[in-house]
Length: 402
Image (cartoon, rainbow, N blue to C red; front, side):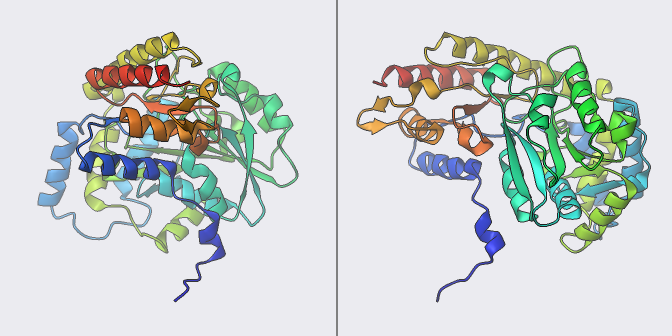
């Protein structure tokens, strides 16, 4: 029987991270010692006080459906968090809790986009954005940046990219995959441009907000009065509290957008996991400076970043810049394009990543997945000994290229 899938399904592709993950698992099953630098999650455990809250929720029989937009006390806690940490004022009814930040983003895209609406997507971008836009009927309009730009857009990039079909800008700082962090002055310049284009919404993905390695807090687009009602703020618990498997994210937006997302979510998943919500409540209620695990993770990531950056700088034909946030580094490896490993020619980042995995047993993610084929994403969410092993293997691998 010939299966006739929908046109919408055929627009999207399997995530490159999944492809690399499948290959890594296959090699591991064959006994290979794989060093994994491809995972987009902290390699730390969830803090004990959060786990205890989940145990308590089970004992208290939080085993029934939760309200579609999330428990009222959790939404109130998120509103308080946004005021406390970000100086933003939202009402609980403007907040929707979802099964991961990815669902929050998808809800917003479904709520905002009509077929043919264009979405400004600065590259490098988180790999799923592109296909999510297509799934919602939108058209990704990629804004290319380079390592010389620091992988950041400016108002000049926006000016040459907008059209009368532009509906949304996706803004992610700190950035996955580059680790780029927009300073307050850089955000202000972009905001000044957007103020003069009132039909453009901004989806601000803030999930890495606690992993910034300079003495400056992120400035939200929602902080500008002219942009507040046009900004959809996305955040979650996965990165900040090492809770990726718990699956909980949230959005804060204009009440009309929030209400639309509530309706959409009601037809897809209903409310998020009840136990996770009770655990998230105690995490979000607590001030970040009172959670030593956050500072510990940030300090460990900084040490690892510095080690990997220092090592990469010594390797020939690799260009890199010091990431200021998240836990990724995004070196330009295009200097090896055209080189050969034995009889195999490296033509692009995928070729490089596959050979590095098969021959050196280091798992990374090719930059093409993030819209920049010249680069390779390395996650330093791994121990220093494993990172040292990976860098030594990378060095030995590139020395064999001819």
